[in-house]
Each structure stands twice: as C-alpha cells, then as structure tokens.
Length: 533
Image 1: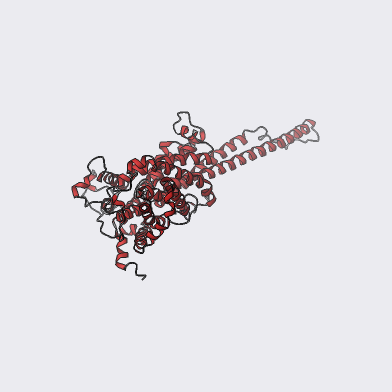
Image 2: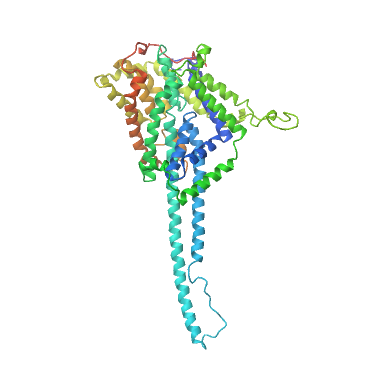
C-alpha cells in the first residue's frame, strides 16, 4: 500500500529458513508437552539436587534452563510452573498435616485433661469431697489454659509454615521464569529474537565468512548463560532463602537431612512414583529430542567435518527441525505389537501417533510463527525504505567513543526498552540500524549485534517485556512487584556478564578486532526466500 514493498515480497518473509527452524522446535515442544515428558524431567532434576530450599531452587531452575535451550521460553514456563504449584501445594499440605498430628498428640498428653468429677456422692456431707471438687476445678482450669497455649503455639507454627511455603513458591516461580529466559540465550531456537537475528545477519551479510551455525552460537551463548544463571541462583536464594554462597555448599553437602527435607523428599518421590515407569511415548519423544540436538550439533561442528557436507550444503538446521518434528506424526504412541511378546495377531487395532494434527492445531503457538514472519517483513521494510541507513547516520556522534563504551550504551538502551516491548520486535528494528552503525564506526558487526540481541532478552522486571513474565504473574502468589524486586539486579548482572564476555573470549572466538570486507552493506540488501530448508 505504501509502495515500499510488494505483497509478494512481504509474503516471502514468512517462509524463510529461520522461521521453519523455529516452527520445527515448537512442534517438538508440543510433543514433549503432549506426552508429559516435561514433568518427569522436572521431578527427576529435583531428586538429583536434593530437597532443601536451596536444592528446590536449583532443581527447578536447571530443568527450566535446560528445556528452554531447545523449546521456546514461554512453552517451558507454561509446562513447568504447573508442576511447581502442584508440588508446593503437596509440600505445604504435608507439613501442615504433620503439625496437626503433633498438636493432637501433645494436647492429649497434657496433665489433668483426663480427670473427671463423681456425681454420686453428697458434697455437703463429705468435706473431702468438697476439697476434691475444688482441686478438680482448679486442675480443669489449669488444663484449659495449657490447651489454649498449645493451640496458640501450633496456630502460630501453622501460619509460619504457610508464609514460608508461600515465599518459597514465589521465589521458585520467579527462578523458573528467569532461568527460562536465560536458557533461551544458549541456542538459536531458544528465543525468537535469536532466530530473527540469525536470519537478518545472513541476509545483511550474504558474503560473510563467519557463519552463525547452531554450534557457533552455543560456543558463545552457553558459557555466558551458565555464568548468568549461577549468579541468578545466588541472588535469588539470598533474596528468598537468606543464604548466599552457602547455598552452593548446601547442594553438595553430605550432612544428614532435616525432618522437613525428609518430608519434602517423600512428597517428590511420591509424585514421581505416580508417573510410573517411562512410557513408550515418552521414550520415543526423548529419543527424537536427543537425535535432533545431536544432528544440529554435528551438522557443522567446526572442529571436525560435519555430516552436512554429504549434502553439499543443501541441508540446514531448519531441515533437521522439520524432519524430526514430522516423525512425531508417524511414530506410534504405543509400543508396536511386533515388539511385544504376545501370541495373538499383530496390528489388530490402529495405533495413534505421538501427536496428530488436531492436537497440533490446539497446542501449537501459531501467533509466535506469525510474529516471526511479521518481524522479518518489518526488517525488510526498514531496510528497503532507507530508515535503517538514516538512523545509522544519525548515530555518527558515537564515533568518538571507545567501541566497548558504544556497545555498553547500546546494551543498556536495549535492556531498558525490552521491558516495554517484545524482544523480537526490538531485534527486528535495531539489528538493521546497528548493522549500519557498525559500518559507520568501522567496527565488526558482531561486536555490536550480539550484545544487542542478548540484551533484548533481559526483560526481568515487567510482564509486558516477555511472555514468560506474563505467564508467571497469572498465578496469584506472584505480583509484578516481585519481578521488579528481583529483576533489577539481574539486569545489571546480565549487562556486566555480557560486556565482559564479548570483550574477552568473544573477541577471540568471533575475531572481532577488525572490520571485515564482507561487512560492507549493499544498498539493496533485503530479506528473501532464497534460503533453502
């Protein structure tokens, strides 16, 4: 309508290679959720780390961090938070039940509660009887006072348990949300903004000699995210459990468990036992998930020749994602009869696949797929209209600053803006602009763009910044102020970790010291559909 792009050019942006990569990852996430594998992973992590409050934080955060590396952050949080709520509810109910049993036992054991008065003697004719009655009344009054004191003490203890479990549940919920956001930094498919950036990078720099493959991204993203999530864990257990570095010691302590920890362990084991042994469908999805990760990793690992060379470069990460997700529509949900030791005829009834199309229609995040396509089209439009070049030219005043200061300023601005808008939209708008800025400043584009994209995921304070925060605040025990209280520090921690990382091992890994020849932008660079799956 505006004449910047034709409808045909806009439509092409919705079907580029990176979009299919993300769609394939979302489809595998549907398979994991549909079989309940996510709950088994979360409970197993808790059993592995232990049952102290610090261990509960670690177990849930590790499960969230790991899952969000491979499926979207929002999907991870949506799958794990119900497990958190159910388990915390069981723990609180169990502790209160034990306390009430103790109350009953202690009340019964109090002296004087079993005394009674005989009504068959005439107290007027028996002075001993009068004295006995008087003593009995005093005893009953003293006993009543004791019982009241016991009830008050146990009421206070029950209220303390409720408040402690509410605070713990609040902290774990925030921890799971933050861990999912940080875990999304590890891989290209971890969050949409990463996928958008890779697609824009390939289109802006078609002659690049530095491919951002799945492995190349992980070599930088995983170390950054690991340091970040460990510091996040320490901050949260200090904030919610009031323990700092000793929280790490608790994870590896060999001392005996307290009664509360034994009770927690019993509840977790009970929940895990309800799952039973791993079902065929869970095992199938787990195998597909592991194979997908291995195929991504070894397609072009960098340190050895990858299997992708067998296809002359015609296979991309999106090819793997779509192929493996397609298998979930074929592989059976139940163990095939020819693998069972039965004497009857085989295949006497149809077998449902792991996921069918009605399930996919219901659970697949179509809005995310459309959001990605719209982001690519928007980036295309900003480049075609000349907006990116114009804004980049307006930033010439930064030319007199040291490059690391420019990167820090840009990262701070993006990390603030991401609290109020979607990280995908931020990456879409700013990547072309900052690509132009890198050319103006004669700085390696990755030196500016990678911190920009990572900072776009630093939405830790407001629900408007990311879907993970929005999902968490729908639970009544978590408020926006809880995210503000915990998130302001994480934003600062993230900026420090990111700045140090890109200026240390990031420089040597990406060879960021010089402005490469392939980084010169052409005037008509735009997103197209030439990338093959």
